[in-house]
Amino acid sequence: MKFWTLFIGIGAVWGAMMMWIDPTGKMWGMDPLLEMMRSKMPWPDIFFMNLVPSGFALLFVNGFTQLAAYYLIRKNHRFAPHSVCACGIILMLWISLEWLIFGFSWLPNLYFAFGVLEACTALIYIKAL
Figure 1 (cartoon, helix red, strand yellow):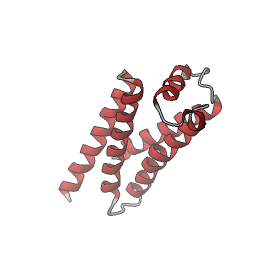
Figure 2: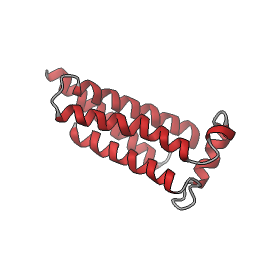
Figure 3: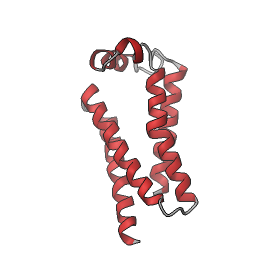
């Protein structure tokens, strides 16, 4: 469980930083994604002028939750496996939203599989308690 939470949490922090370093997305080749978000999401003139708000959403929804679950695992907290399971579900919901906006591609598909593996690993651990 530690691996998934730390790997996904650090990846989310890095992804958010990429969005803040270049809010236009051009440096990382993410500018077409910004245009897709502007065309498919509500309030494009408020939330999707650049990638900064999306970076905060990624950080809060996937970064902090995954890193908090990692912290609970390290502290052997009794709710650690439950938090990991919740993080896996949150990640799968996040990727489902990405599929609606951007369609299917290899990276979101891979992260959806990570969410499934994370949730299943936590469920196996919960059942063993």
